[in-house]
Image 1 (cartoon, rainbow, N blue to C red):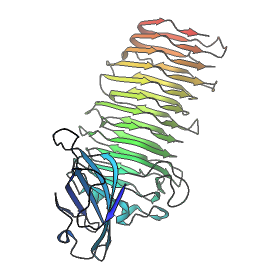
Image 2: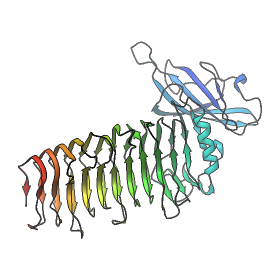
Image 3: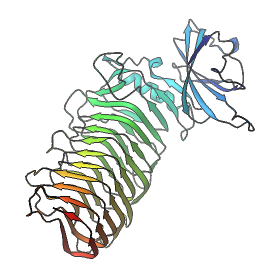
Image 4: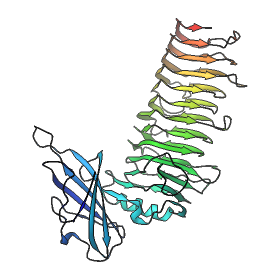
Length: 459
């Protein structure tokens, strides 16, 4: 709902017993902020000189029914009309988004960002980002709201502090003011869209990223830390990426979450995760839902490429095309956890799931592969659906491959190829070989130790 009227004191939108607890005035010309806590918006709070536009973030204190009053922060995104320095009207929109009390909302349009599909918005977007970053402490982060349409950029957008950037949707259609959402379209073939150097949280959601030229490098989101520095708790939701070299490229990022990704026609990797030797174990992270799809079928390496140790959960993702669906080659760290469940793997050129411990004398433990669908229709050179790769002194251990469904019509090295593992159970799987009995269901190599194979249905 929207409330409009005099600025003397805005009323909470149809809520009883609410107080204004924080009002922030954000002037785009210098990024300054005026805070009027628990006060009416009075003449004294107005700017003393002409300003083109003004944004306000209002937080309400909302008590729970029949209980003592508690802080339940709900951010109401607000807009103000300003002409010649006079506040004319306030609109308060209930977005039902939970944020910390005091989170500031800033609007990119107030900094001249057009998103009209023609104007180069790079400098204005950068100015809006810098202003948003400066509104709050480096570790807290403000919210930058982008308008609908196609936002043209010719260089990357640096992120140096905690920040949340929201678009209006990731399903874009042609033309300015489309109802599909926000698309940041780069004309630079080698640039990232977002280059994150902060160790604090970066949030990106409801947005599309693509290029107007053939991508030869760069990522939609590049988070790169060095040494022992680690970016933590970054989150991405409903972000579409089309025709990029990398969708996500992370080095030393921990405890991140990627929800409902839509990554198509990636040139190298859809998602690439790595670490330095100083920060080998990157905690628990997840990829949930969405589609990672290489339309070229032969150009991309892997939908998801994982090199560091640490816990990774991949659930409910559709992976299609490229050489590998998920490729884990652990080059750092002694331990890790990999949970792969309820995904769909289809039409990869080499292997749907390839896992190898590449750290000398170390063990990567706790791998569960459950409830997935693996399908290929006889691509030339296809090796197998699952590979636990060979290594002479490195092992995978504590592996369970349970309850999956395979349809593999041709494979060079069997459907499941277990070469280097110590302790595994392969049970309760259904293996359809399309009548091609020359395809071996399960292969155990000489370094496959303590492996139990039982109750698999192969035909």
